[in-house]
Picture 1 (tube, rainbow over the protein chains, first blue to last red):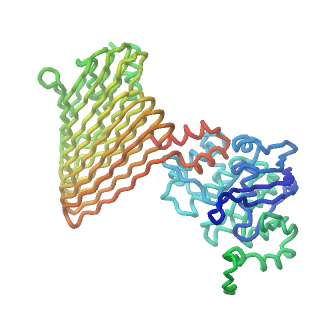
Picture 2 (cartoon, chains in turn blue, green):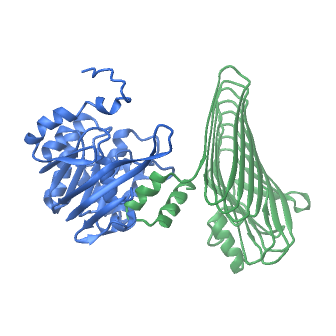
Picture 3 (cartoon, each protein chain N blue to C red):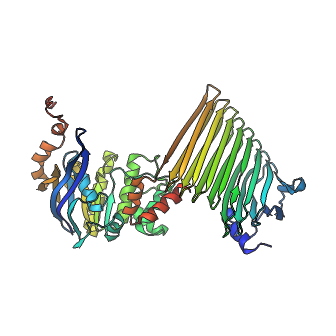
Length: 253
Length: 306
């Protein structure tokens, strides 16, 4: 349902003060996401996971390659058009607003202001406190609260494809399992194709397919068991990236 | 008595479809149009019809006073002095506002100078909206001033809004806060085209335990200019905060100067100020909910000025 064809994303960087350089963040990725499956995208920090997710939503412009969604070329469509086509995106660090409440965002996401329908959405995403509805989505909210709101507005879109970027950021340990169950239920009951960018074991275990990204390439596709050796190898150590020219101070591990 | 233009202006500035219930005083083109008093709220004219004195009896609760002003006479600049005396332990709402309809080339303007004496333990909510419209090219000018005196334990909540269409505005807000009193001022101003708006605020926290919060939200479109100056002066153990945010669109210009003066060692004064364009993460979020860029901008501005 989502097809990436030779997708690249290149940024211009200042290199050593010698003018502009180019760095490939996503380097010729081709992949076909199947309808109704649950994908976890993982990999080291800076490997390109979030960038890939943002390319799909249209938040970052594609440098080269093609994105097809349900057979339609969406490579040059703006965010709004992709959202209307059925793609929803949950941000790792959600925007905070002055004067916009959770109710406002939920109503925009769901396309309705009818109280019963908004309440039904709260039940669906497991937010039981009604007083939460009229809270401003501003800097006063805790990290956990704003992520719940982000999740709810994503689900309220009834998307065909839901992309969650690090949904567990700021969420307490006790909330992660219910969150995983919610995303699985959305996948199973509504057939939502789900892509979660995460390092969290709970999401990796819930996924049908794990994609591991490193240096802008997909380096692994398969189940969690098969991913484990690579995860151990790539997950925590960013030593290689930290090297400054030849000044090798040795890995601290 | 009210024509179609009057009705539109009254609806916009005072949310009035018809004459309100309770006490009211509607002034049109420098003259009293209609007035009503209630058992607890008296309204009297000052000499030469230069303004009114609204006297609210002590312990009057859940009552409101509407005092809108409408202008539709080209070349008229109407200055009005209004005094509000709010009795001890009263709890009332005062709804003011000025609507200008400009049909000609000559400028039209209004200066509403409002003085509030809020009695011990009394609460007042003051809502003021300014708006101008009409096909004429004459300048629409509004120069409002408020002076607030809060007695011990008094509370005042002031909502001051300039919705649009006002070419020049110079606002002055002054307040003196007695012991344990509370003042919350929220000012919302939208300018566009070549409009100019200046807001000067001096809040003096003179009583021990007094608290003040000044919030300013500015949206500056087109080539308009808005300047905001606010000073909190603390003479006693007290708490005060200024929060001023400005969103600049197009080529708008803004100067924001919050200032804090602590003249007592136990004063706690803080401020936060920001000027900038609409944050791109806010736009991206709303567009990811299916809104177009323009719809997203409108929703963000609407919320910001709410």
